[in-house]
Amino acid sequence: MVLNYIWIGFLIIGFIVALLRIAGFYFRDFLLQHFNIVFDIADRDVFQSIVNSMFQSTETSVRISIYLIGVMTLWLGIMKIGEKGGAVNTMAKLVNPFFNRLFPQLPENHPVMGSILMNLSANMIGLDNAATPLGLKAMKELQELNRDKEKASDSMIMFIVLNTSGLTIIPVSIMAFRAACHAQNPTDIFIPLLIATYISTLAGLIYISIVQKIKLYHPVLLAYLVGTTVLISGLIWYLHILPQPKVAVFSSIAGNFLLFFIIILFIYLGIRKKINLYEQFIEGAREGFEIAVKIIPYLVAMLFAVAVFRASGAMDFLLKSIEHFFVLFNINTDFVKALPVAFMKPLSGSGARGLMVEVMNTYGADSFPGFLACIFQGSTETTFYTIAVYYGAVNISKTRYTVVGGLIADIAGIIAAIFIAYLFFKS
Image (cartoon, rainbow, N blue to C red):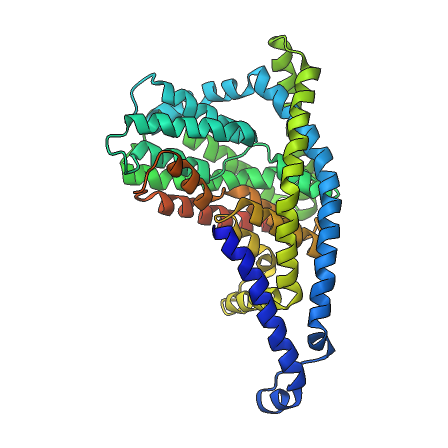
């Protein structure tokens, strides 16, 4: 529903702005004389620009979709090998002691803990198609333990905020879109995105733990949190002292190594379980093809609306207004061009995806806004959509502080993404 209003808003606002520009052109002498506002031929021809951009957006959608089908087919095939080989189970075992203490209200060894761990583990390795059913299953089991069937329990809130913070180890779809937009190295956002999404998750986790009075200084929780935070902080410090050209090189080498290492690890797990790797790859690849095809209508719809919004001049007006605000505080404004993705992501994943593609097409996949748009896309989840779907599945009407927790994680992820992008991609 929210995306419907946003989509309509892009088109109507674009139309109104275009009308104002045409009116301004025909009253240009009066406006120049009394208000010092300049209108020119571009304002007169604004509707021609809008119609041209509409056709260009459909061409862009088809071009990107062709690349997307291939890349998504490849990666979903690899993910299927990891899933069947036990990567999700392995991940669940690694984080089990940690999550047991984040959900103190749940009975020990209750089946719901397995569903929660499997859902979060599937999200971490990018198995969205497997993660959502597991998440809904976990919510139904949590509802069975919930005393007030209309009000979200503490465990539900912790679970959903961990979901909306969007911790992802392998950003498959984002790398696919970067490849489709002709990025020189589609995986170069791997490490920056991993850092940003971790900070987002950490912020949401800390807030919910404070509200629920979970003792984060417990030795087990402290070991996980401090260990991971020290590792991430050490990585950021090391990259900070490197010259800018070497930061990009390090990110590329380390990111590509880790990605291929994960592929080899998945293959090893599959061999150990004696599964047919080729057949599993084909099964996953088929799912990847289906997912890529399903994305196409959403991509066309959003690119069309954003193209109208930008060609009308409304996008430029919005971005310049934001730039002027930050200039007042002497803040570098290079990040502003990617902000629409950050604003859209809590509301709609498909909407943010369309804006991410639009930013890469406008400024270049390897431009600073292009890099930052991708990090924004991967650093958080669709907070309002996730809350609506998960609570709606179990008829929860009182969500308590879930939205606040999710938005805190989103804001932390956005701020972290900006700083990390400047560290990695801005000389």
